[in-house]
Length: 452
Image (cartoon, rainbow, N blue to C red; front, top):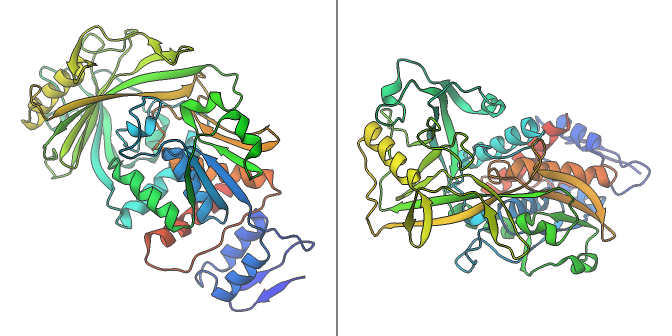
């Protein structure tokens, strides 16, 4: 059986199968790229011959909801099971990393061999969201500054408006008093306003027809879930549900929030943020290796951070690891002193701003950057067979859960289609000016680019 749609193109199912291969859908879109999205009639026939598959996503953090939204927009019927969501009812559990991001779109603190695929795909989606006016997506001029020579990491190849620091511009570069020669780069950095960004993702997912069920899923419940494919985005809880022989690592990080502050801007009136790594004699990780502090002005508050304390969780769920000895107590939480003092030094000497450390408008939080203790592949993005189902794992993002969220979601789709005879089940929405429709079209385009 075949269908000829002369106004838009020709599509022919193979052997009466209710499926379209990646190559078929790619060719269909290429043939129609100059005539717009398929008409309602074409959409009807495509949908008639596509058997939509139900998929369950476990995890309500940024990885889980981004994956659920991506799959929902690309043709799957999805349900997202989440014990917690990012809202006022979530417990302040440091394992729930989506409660504690600085949310800059920079892939720090992650180990993966697929960064050159995941990061550009994510950047493309964040850029589109910003251009479409998503008010929780903003842009900073971000500086990554070092007090010693630093090799340029691979991710900088994809940064927007990247510029290396020059010797004749240190006065405008974030720096502390009596800083030595500075090295590094600056670029346009997307930043998600938290938790507004997560709330918008939840709304987009529901508007796309997705379902969120607030329910804890244990390992004994997996076989009972009404779907043949399960996407595991449970993060730090994954080892309680699925098998993983890799050691787990929990890098503890602290955030300090200074309220009622205006954004800090560059001489070009750009909102400015930075990561600043001084000599280890000034500030270092507990093991003595160099460590940074960072600063993000978001809305009417400043977000400060810069601790990377490696550790593990014991059988009782208590964190064990090396800590900084020089700390300051903020709302009963011991925070490395240099997060406040070094940031204050930088802000004062560069921008003439100060942090009122004794102000009542200050509080701190602490969360874990969770990954598998694998120097090459701490991120787990792979398919497995467990509990009689196909499981696609998407966790272990370290400090890059937000930055890699869209790229990982699209790679989950690749793993699903490979597991189901290359079925691509995208139902194109009609072209419009809504964010949801334009997001779907962009996801389709980036996915097709990944297939090339």
